[in-house]
Image (cartoon, rainbow, N blue to C red; front, side):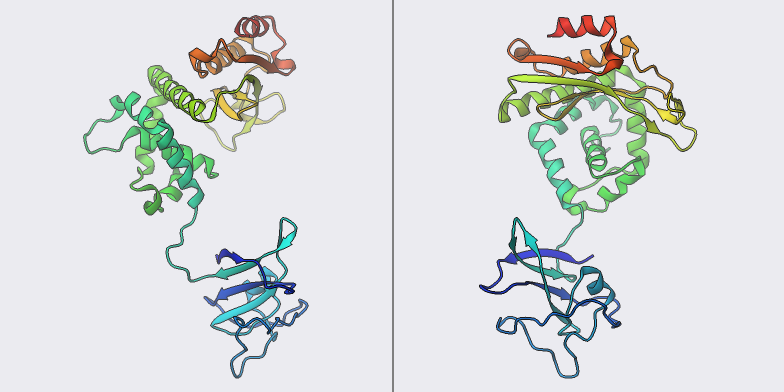
Length: 318
């Protein structure tokens, strides 16, 4: 896919942004149904068409998808296109042969933030017992890479391959089987799950030190339905006649943080007080202890949380 780069504002009086596309792949011309627009030749950077090439004669498949109106050079195309950002026209350069281009570059920032906040090191320290060989993969980095993969839109362990292919950004990434075994071991041993939550809490404390702790924290407790399209462990029918899972989570409204999550089968009750109490307790454990007395905390839930046990837990926490 062509890489897009902003190269500055258009020239004064120039009503169109300039698009530059380096040719690559199929260049078969086809009749264009789009309105042809003459490029402003006053711009010295726009080269005239070479001999034998007719301006505006047609566009390739890529050019037509981009809405490009004019072809000047079969090897280095120049186009005019109206591109507006923040209420003003901008000049955009599009190339398909750039060097050093990588996909999913933004996810590397997420991994670096985890490293800077101490999430990775905290996970490595608390999950050190999982590592069986000295040269094996660091558990903290494996969990970090899985979290990055999920944030990037991944849905299963095999989607870790998207991160693994970008070794220039993420370094060595564990195989699917290694990551699966680590997740399975953490899920099987309750002590490791507690270690995982403890690592998250220590990183959150560091983040609040850097960005500032909120004066008020609203903890939203709510469940969601996740559909399973095949037989999976603990998948079951739900109250909406679907099939899958019914996890219950807690989220901080002011800081947009996920504080706690309780995995449940699809047939779990919507107003089960014990589940709400568990999630509330886990979410409060994520708040730095020295700030519990200074932050105004509000526990918020829909009608599913209107139970006596949930009300008692919420009132004692706030």
